[in-house]
Image (tube, rainbow, N blue to C red; front, side, top):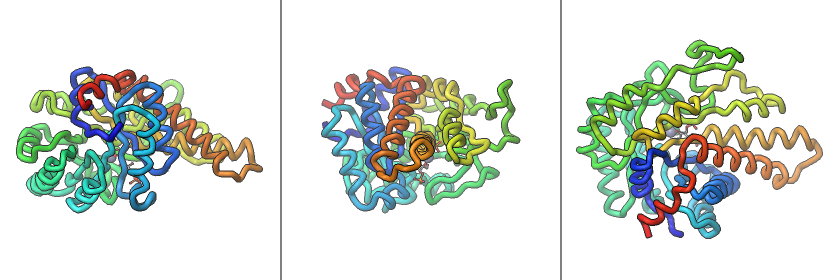
Length: 329
Ligand code: G3H
Ligand code: 13P
Ligand code: ZN
């Protein structure tokens, strides 16, 4: 099964009221865990690589790892550039065989964002590659793009029609209160529930609804959408880690988003936590082990468990591989 773009995935997700998981990849075990989970549940999936991931894995490794996964599993997979900082980065991924790219020019002025995005769209569409852009800015740290929490800007709904029509972009990442990383909110921004667990402020579903009204049927993307699942944070902290007050986006809010115009939900931090939990737990249980295959196997198992959970309980994309494959074959 060759790599596919995101167009058909988003069409089906929008019609069916579910979302496609976009999981960040950095090494072989992460690619295996995600694609094995997706294959087991017959789910379409997006594998995305940041500039940092490409630098870490070096050269063509990530694309070949993804191609190897497709030799093993017959599921619809798109390979996407996460947070492309400029035209050159997007071009290099398109030339390298990525089927989708994000141009993140959201920190530029509105007009500059339109111009940069349009240039990427022209290059990408001529080569049958899909393009995601961003309007509004998330708090937290994006690859090469630092935005302080104080400057976080929600997407302005009145800008979306002009942006989408002038750029010809295929999907739009919006800012409605999510942010990157495992510490999305300070304890001061949260309340505590009866069990003492931090509860963050609700996402701005009113902004999402307004955007949906203005560009009906258009694919919306949520970045910074890890839940920072307490189970993995607990395992990390019980096995020598220090991740006090890590907090993410509650899963009920992500389920609600997946049923709306949100077609793509980005998850990276949750994968990192699951991998780290498995490895830390392994080292505490087996202090004599030093073969990487032993401890990384446990990390990989937790990543697969996590992705299965996301597909079934949050995204609702299980069993949807067949309808996407029917559109591309
Ligand atoms: O949005 C950011 C992603 O989590 C990628 O993070 O740049 O550390 O690979 P990274
Ligand atoms: P998280 O840090 O919430 O996993 O977000 C990842 C992301 O948005 C990648 O683009
Ligand atoms: Zn992101």
